[in-house]
Length: 577
Image (cartoon, rainbow, N blue to C red):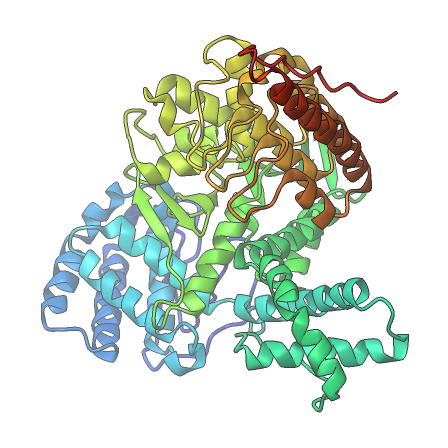
């Protein structure tokens, strides 16, 4: 049965939706449209005349678009060669063929009537992409098609699904919550009625400090006493605020909300079916999730949340990791704020069809038609060459949520152990390093990461009581080692309030109790600053013993100085039961 028809209207059918509104009619009537996406190839057209007409209208569309965006004359040659060799484009990947023979015609018709001013946040970005698409027609058809699909994703997002708006709203709410908690902590004695005045005072200070996000204040005029008091604690609050409103934290928060909503619908009774150890989405569940994507103001990319099992009737399942969700949000943010290069995405093509992308420490794999989290399966699907030694790829693997990927990478791809064990505060690297120590593949004292942290620093940072207790006998060589900030393990344990480790470390005769970090702070000072009362009591008890031993040692030295006898070793400090 032929699957091509001639129509005067077109329907843009998003892969994850059933139907959207029809676009306005164009002047050129009787356009050829391909009605079935599953089996895209030239033979599916009803006649060779229809196929020729389809190519002709594509050529006319590209020329009109090139004129609209003011490309130079050389673009005409790229368009002509693409259309002349259109039949050879069947060599593109199978998943692109349906788009080549259907979506392409529909998309170009839409691009011809596109009002760029409507997409003010994307205007320059879309125009640049269209320009690149036209020049890629000659040598890189797959990239051109992928870029056209990406533009469609941008211009078909319903109004209100602007990630920048969501980020600004999320930051405003987060900032308000941070300020309230700060006021409750540092101004606990004030009346409840005055709390709002203090909150507004901090917002006014932020405004004066040119904080880039707008905040709503109920009280614009400040009392002089409140203004003065809040000024003293402003920079403490600002440090908390900057940490809580870090762009990556916000993107992850929004991405997690999107995922949680889809998961909630997925796991409702009747929306799933368990087959063996897999849970698949039913048709009813699929419809409810699609309804959610249409009704929510959140920008949802279902291909980043749901996967299809091609070996089991293409059943839909929930993907394990969220890296692709975060990556999609990051790309949307960059697209909306591209003017002036406010944000940038790093990328490295690692195979013919796959690119590793990074945004401020977020990593994902772009396969062209969809995004993926950085997992072993994703890299295998991208046919990654195991011999590739690229820093961006290595970082993506290092910070991958799939812990086994790092070990696989180290075992199969990386000959230099220093390239892997470079950040012990990263959970994946830490777990791998502990595993290697336990297998005696590396010595615990041999490595410091790029920040000067030892594995003892890392155990305390990760609250890893099991590893600490299991390797306690090997840690004595590390107790006084400082990282690049001058922090010892004792200081870190004091900051964390880990009392048992503090007591263990103090039992070592070699411990440097009075050591200071780069700020001149001792472990006791750090414990006091962090209000860890139990640790403070332990330190104060030890300090009395320590000071007494120093005095006793000094007296002994004076007494024995003429006899030229070496002083004795002070007895080991013991716990008080």
